[in-house]
Length: 45
Image 1 (cartoon, one colour):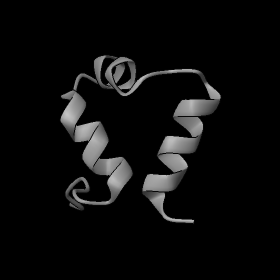
Image 2 (cartoon, rainbow, N blue to C red; image 1 turned 90 degrees about the horizontal axis):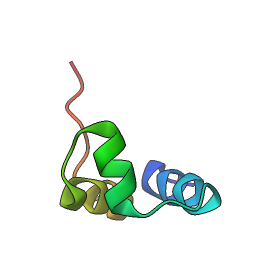
Image 3 (cartoon, helix red, strand yellow; image 1 turned 60 degrees about the vertical axis):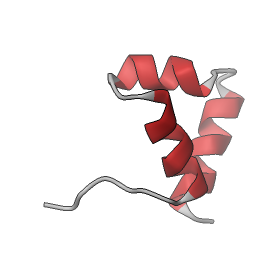
Image 4 (tube, one colour; image 1 turned 90 degrees about the vertical axis):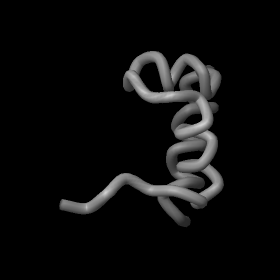
């Protein structure tokens, strides 16, 4: 299972929307959407 699938599964299990997760993490809703789709990931420093 890819990280995006895990994020989506945890979010749905918690009954949260992408917007709610984005607000909690102080990121944009499109960022959460991209993470779930595997289009964009955070930088690894």
